[in-house]
Structures are given as structure tokens and as C-alpha cells.
Image 1: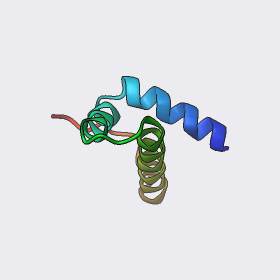
Image 2 (image 1 turned 90 degrees about the vertical axis):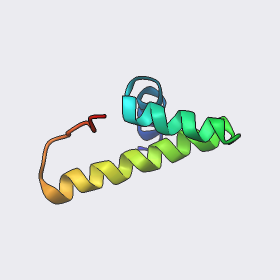
Image 3 (image 1 turned 45 degrees about the vertical axis):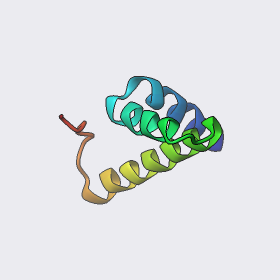
Length: 63
């Protein structure tokens, strides 16, 4: 499970606009790349838990 979450976080940090913005903010603050990926993974888990709790489909944030 950890491997899947880690790979999802790497892909999201590169291709998902919300996760990409979050990643860039952390990298800009001088955070380590591994720490950034773990933070993105944790954010993905939080989003997934909210989706399951509310029983709603994924809705990307619009700027």
C-alpha cells in the first residue's frame, strides 16, 4: 500500500495542478524532496478520506 501511495504522490506532484502548487510551495521553502513527496502523499490521503466520508466524487479545485 505504501508503494502505491508513494507512486501516486509522485505522479500527482507532477501532473495534478493542486498538488503541483503544494509541491512547488514546499520546494520553494527549501524542503527536502523526499519530505515533499511524503507531504503530498499525506494530502492525498486526507482528500481520499474526505471523499469517502462525504460519498462525493473527486472535484478538482478551480482557481
